[in-house]
Image 1 (cartoon, rainbow, N blue to C red):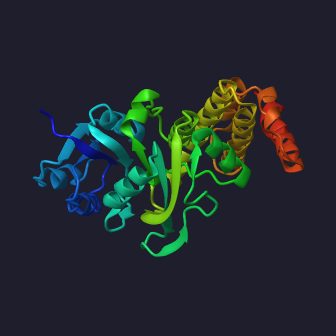
Image 2: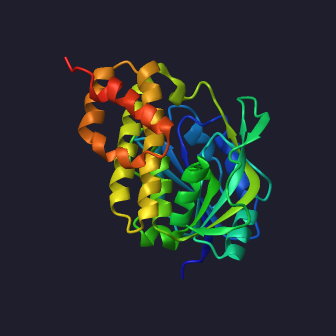
Length: 318
């Protein structure tokens, strides 16, 4: 008979030799509940696999795959996980003492499908600087669709996976998987998570330190085009999801959020990408201008859309 597992921790790792050992050992030091820690080595070329293989704890499950990206790695772990709850972590960040125990306790007490926590943003030295979010409904429970509307109204969308602990049954019920790709698909995961309209609880417990690494791949010049293309996928998916919502208020909120992601795209497009023509064609092909109009909620949105028309929709393709 297979033993019950309380929580599955899923960690993609790529060339994480400097941090992965410490993170895994800290997780495994918690002993008051049953866990599995699933680390997916996504084609590392350093000593990541060697470090992990030296850990003999039976609660550690290792998966090795050729480099396919962080979202494919998470999907590989989701396919085999057995815990009642799921937590996603990044290999290079830091967690508080009692991290899993407190998350499990709070999620159980709240009778939530998803509990969302807080964290610290820190510079590359680990110096704590500021909370990840400020405007969430701390100590309260909302349905997922209420949360979508709250986030859009407050202009704060905490889509970071490492803020969440999720009931596995909820993931299975809604067939949730990551859209594979290079960047920004955590936005889509969290929006689809919320659109399932389960019960969400919010705790202002800052139990995670997100390290802003200026040397990471997301800051490389050759990665900006990939990020911009991923934003196009995100915008198109949000607009498609909006059309499926029975509640007008939720549709309206998702349309507004699509405009927010359009701003992120245009910021990259104007200043950092190298292949503007290809991205412009892709944007116009996937996102019809009239679908952005329902997202207008202010004069600022009107001004932004005029910029988008001038820079994207009205530009001559040579």
